[in-house]
Length: 506
Image (cartoon, rainbow, N blue to C red; front, side, top):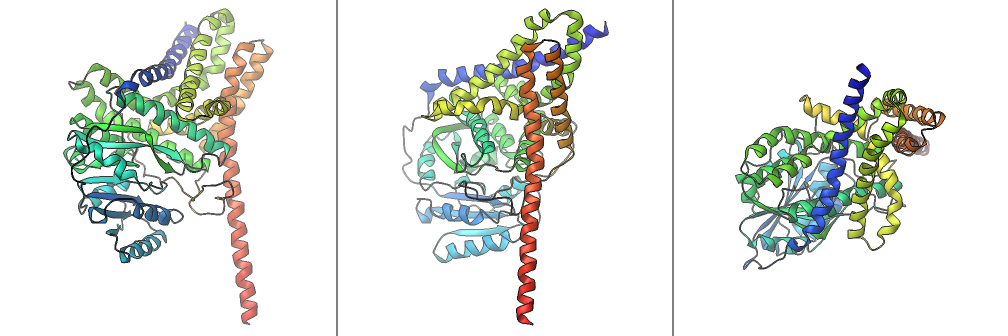
């Protein structure tokens, strides 16, 4: 009886994971079915409106000047543009940003450095504080890791000729996509979100979200949706759903690109993923009841559910990982034929579904898409490897554990020759890496067990788990050690230089 109860739990989790993975097929279907609904600019504004550009930064010494310079290079009438550098920095970034702002102010730009001495509300709090003095009818937001293109406002603002449009989002591109194996995989993951998911949701009439940057808001839409709030770590997702619940229309411009820098260091990447995963579940808890009780079409409600709760799949995947070995033992007693009829189809369809989803994103975005498919197996492994990190995020959201908004380190990495290890802001390692290592060892044992028992059909799936956990764990440790070595080298060089100067002075 206990054996069958265990298998019932195992298959319930397996089927739930399968449902989330299979939802990718539906998103791809929506993407291709909705191509006829691509946003078309029918009318231009008779008169260009005033626009405020908000640049939220926090300890961004390496990229602050790049961001401010690019923002001041935007092609838009100067008398209709004001720029706010919303600076919560606690290090030398504040002085650097202030100096840079003063340089452009002397050149005639309407730009202001707004420095808060606290981080109340984190990024959302900074944006909300900036709104108090924003002069624009429209608000463009660019994070520190972005380099806004000069024509970004001209290409987006005219979509607001439709008075019901509250926000226009552009697609991210990546300055450092080719920097490393990790950045190449991240870029594909983000392409799946932007190229396929955003397009499918928006163009099919479902809700989608502002991504916190590279978009422009109608100020009225922010205000009527009760503004930026800080009770979730994804203030952008939260505001997006509240604004759409108020009836505002959003537009996604798949073909308008905004260059960005993606994390090159895995511990910083894990911190980013933790914030996104936790924030989405917080938003689900906050808004899903209201969405489900609303008069919205069923298709909107269903997609909102999958969208906001998708990160639950990480927790389910982690539980499934732990249950793999006992499930194999249980099925030895029942017979492997049952597994071939149950587990394998679920795992195969889910795996193919995820691969298909990301393959479509590459095909739709790049001419050389076939050369990128070689990264898909590792992409799936990385997703599984992140399950420990993101499961903690989900549990923190479920049990209302409050944590601060941890920024993603940026190092101004654009080319392969650029280096990050000797710079500040490096991500930190924690005890979760031990769990990741143990899970890698656990799946090594499972592979051996499957081989000894001639269950060869399971080995490819088990290897995806094994590689994922080992990759995340070892890279987390390696990059922390690399950063420490680089930092010590700089310190030794500095001390040696000071000693030499002292000897010369003497």
